[in-house]
Length: 215
Image 1: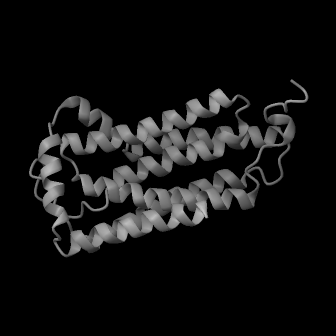
Image 2: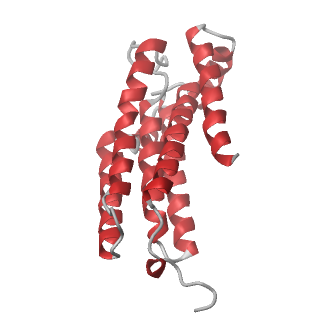
């Protein structure tokens, strides 16, 4: 049921948002109002939005995948290369999914960016959600401490939210563009989660946190 919701809810929300964007629906008026209330182009918001750049997010993911592969191989895990490879393939799906959607919806940008189209969904948001979320999924099984797992997860969420806020605050994207990026990213992360479950993402018992009997 949880997996079905993680796939269905963002898919339905994305379909509704796409319908509004393509048909110039009434929701775009509220979207513009929120954008005008939040937009304030400054250096700080630009730096936050840059965390969703491929030049930043992809190296962070690459380091995480390399670390996960090293830990799995050192622990003697079978097919140690498969979970990192799966995460990399899901990351590669981002432009393959987002670029055609941008071309189809053909949404103009906000008034503070040069005239152009193709802003929905936000590629920076999708990149951040998938890159930082994938890093969490591949590293989480190898962290012994629950506190470390919570810190890693919270850190990834903060980065995703920082990118989202920066994009809207700087005026690079309308708020609905960012929400659309979250929808696409959530679906891709859920698919990665399912795939990792099938490829053996769990760390060997000796690499995980000791059980209560041995503490």
